[in-house]
Length: 225
Image 1 (cartoon, one colour):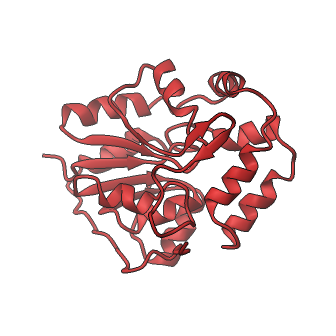
Image 2 (tube, helix red, strand yellow):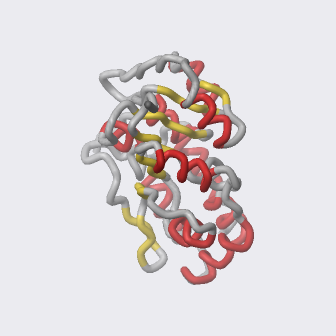
Image 3 (tube, one colour):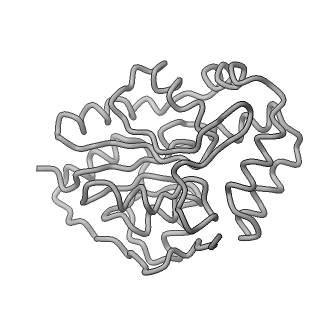
């Protein structure tokens, strides 16, 4: 029996090998877009405000954005087989992304990956809305804490970036690389290093016990409305 019932996976730089949103902004927006990411990292603005300002900079149509993602941003080749193995084992897999959202479903379809839940922001007529945000906090556009807490548990979380910190804190087992590693060490989150989803599968099917969630009472990213 698998030790978890759900796996929540970040998209940009995790399920997809590239950070799609960053590639899009580099290709189609003014270089000043990075100042908004930096302001978010410093806690000076929430992701909804930053993403709204960045989306307004994008100079091409939705179709062109999706076409660019399909051409330039490959999925991790081990993600599709991982989803299939999880499905056979009765484990739900969902993607939780705090990016622009519009390119996720097309990339999944192009790689023949189905049956994956998608929790993300919504691109609407050149803008972005936040149907999966926290009702009382505006630091993140998509609340990865809630994505984890609402999934059938125990929950594994797989990520690599700063926004993944808030999902990692509440998951029963965390797979971290890149920027997420430093956040986990700072927050006291036990984690497994990973390179691809074969590594994640190997760890989940081993005899290692789940470390359990840190689960602070208040998320450290809390920015009330």
